[in-house]
View 1 (cartoon, one colour):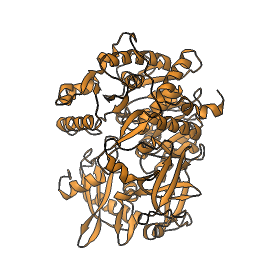
View 2 (tube, rainbow, N blue to C red):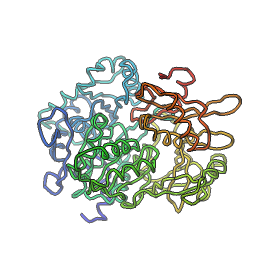
View 3 (cartoon, helix red, strand yellow):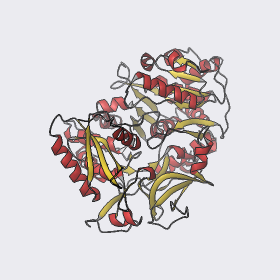
View 4 (cartoon, rainbow, N blue to C red):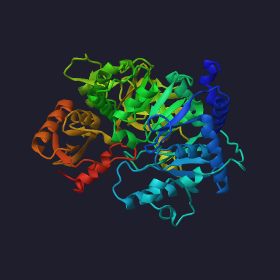
Length: 576
């Protein structure tokens, strides 16, 4: 297959299912040598706790599962919910659902399990919102939430993943043809600024985005190795890492978020051990990686890593600098850092820079961007300079434009406005929510809710419209405060939230942060205020220190600023 054919391969085949079958055939014939390795803490197989299958072997097991699913009533167009921890069986079940011509709905595991009752309530709501006909659930989750409890009062049929994995053969399996318009994934938004909505992703949208990833990342299935700990209910983990690997036959090393968060050093160790070339994570994960790379006594080999994608939350130049510095002695190429932009509504990939460019910064006037919504360039050393990270150009098949928030007219480059996107991998709408769909669609353009600007067609994101703090006529972006406060040693990385509240006729800034410290709170609060003032020139009127693991977050780990604000107003924060 020529390089050009590979760049358009997915769209030429037309469906995710077709791509899976193609990979299985080529893997079985030895044409593709890629495999999937899944970390299993209790495994006695494979290297360092990993169980390995070729894609042909996984496909054979998936067909056996699909045969069982068909006998259980799964048909073309069924919505099948999957709930469980990352495992080879769960990943195989995802493929089995597609082989049945059905739609995959990944139910999120909670980032923090507050109560069993809340988890059951949220899961039942997601099953109802997605019109799931079946629920596949693994044994570990079933011990926390009984399947009968999750499906009571509904027509949802529960299936134990362990029973499905025991399907002896694919006897009776009927190959189901699907079309490009068929729904492949119902991907719920994170719920960081509003209630989660079901993003409808058709096969045609996904294959277009797969080809865009191939073109933008220069992916080679015979040499690239993906390494991922990302959750499968999040688009970056499900689509960008797993689905891409499954539909292209390249090697994937996969673990769960818990495997990474319990021992953050594992991520870079796995990249070293398996020769990882491509990985991805949000900014906070690179902060954790930097700390572990700096402290480890091991000699790791990160020389093969060419894409370390940083996305899903604002990219901090300070974090990137620490990661690059800590990785230097392990052979990390500083230009492997790959800031990018994406969202569920574009399947995953929205904009990519050029591989090998590293992080690039646009230094702009803080005063101009906050008061005039204009990204005026200034010198890097200017006292008024603000660092904006370049997120690249629209990926293949997508187009960007920036519109004025009030007039909705397209603005010139370097003018801050709302980002709109159109193109081939754009979603088909929100499931059973026409009003929400109509609210964000402007003809063929999707209004993202993100404020940003373009320079020579390249994207820079300022923040979410709903999160902007307006003080004295200035637009203050909460992540600027959060990133600055995050640098304080006593503050838990990635666990800071800034927002504004009304007081005495004007907006005042509140910062809520987690700390593990047992004393010295006055000094920590003073440090937070100093960091906030230095970062945005506006004082934090109130600083609240809370217990670890109590800040509200989405199932994918994103901070929920509006929910935190409400908890603050209701005096429900767990204050130290």
